[in-house]
Image (cartoon, rainbow, N blue to C red; front, side, top):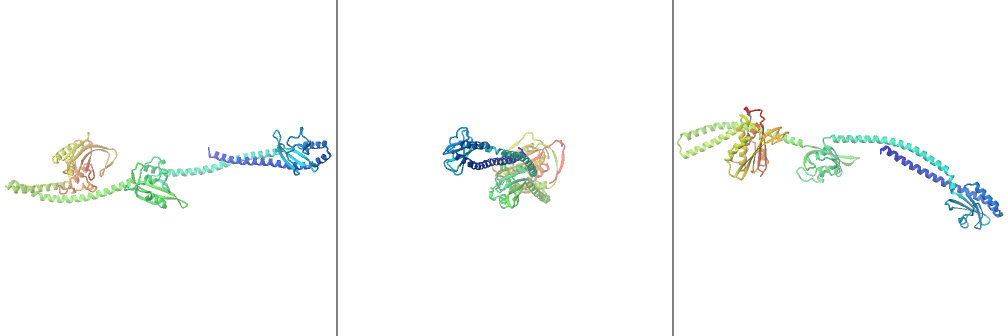
Length: 586
């Protein structure tokens, strides 16, 4: 039902009840007033008539007395009967038949000058009997008044009251209609303004990219916008409204320890009416996953009284990742510059050292070939030559890392390289270490330099075998094809869209901690104390893979072994069998 109709019905209902009540009360009052007035009139007439009746009773003139009573009753329509009793017996009356039974005893014995009693006849008609005692003798005069005749004299006034009531109702209908129209117009204006205000607030909340929710003083949610529901993983606000938000999304600290309500910064801010800001906490989604947030908590006050609070928050996952990436890039740039300087220094030293080693090797070889030496001297010279050649090998590794070289790239099958390297590595492994190849079907070709890729495979397999050492273990090598539909992280870099070949080597060795894992690609870094080599194996691997447009990924943990994956772009066939010559910088 429309508001205007409801207002109209309520107003007209109240007016109708009021008017009917007033009219009914006025009619009843008029009726009762008329009864009392006529009673008083006929009391006076009864006393007046009693003087005339008394003389006729003394003269015992019943004929004249009856004529007097009949004439009086005929002149007064209200008077239905008149009679005189004497010695408690009818003396003269105007009834067609005798005096009704019980009428003589209606007033009892003696009474004052006047007595009025109500009685009903056999037709249940109500009468007022007025009795007055005559001064001489025991005679009494009775006048019978009809109440229906008395009430009929009030009907004109009652009809006037009814007419006035109907007129008042008509006026009430008009007033109710006007009141309903005016009230409805004002209410509609206020309702439209309120609806517009609510719609604006709803649009603001719905359009906000930040999550916004309200809390009462107990911490229960009073409202939440769509962005807040989306970030917290809820589809409908009915799942959140009325719930304690701390228990839903702020129950655990960043370090995983429980956060009690009394320790919650938001709850405490609500209690104290404080504004707070934080960017080092996490909120929890419905699926129990957490995400870093920056949030602001503002108290809601009315007339100085605290009603609750409004919390605005944003997901800063991308910001934290960007900061971490920036830190990583800065560290990588610093390491690159450091390695560049170190490589240049090492290259210069290695070149000079190689010039010193060349005559040692040459003279030692001449002595061994041209002189007749004892077995002891031959052994000593052989040791000198072996040591010099090991030193020369180290120098060559340093030079290959620090100086640019020219290489030829061709389409190649990485599985051929892997199996060739496996045969070489297997011959040097102890019987406690096994190699397990896992190669998928339809692995595409890559475009690269065979010798360099072979060196990558050899270095990774050798490192894996050395990580196991003399213990029982397995080196698992693998080749697989991956298709990247959208750019994604891989190791320390990002893979663009395309097809790639992944070469992986996993060992069951002791694994590495985080500090070691971050340094394994540094030149001259090695975890094998006193072992052969300059610590350039993985540094060279990283340089070669990067030069082929690939990336490296390392997964390792103490006691969990190590898995290194090298990803190479798949050959797209554009280079055909043509030889491509490139210069790869260290």
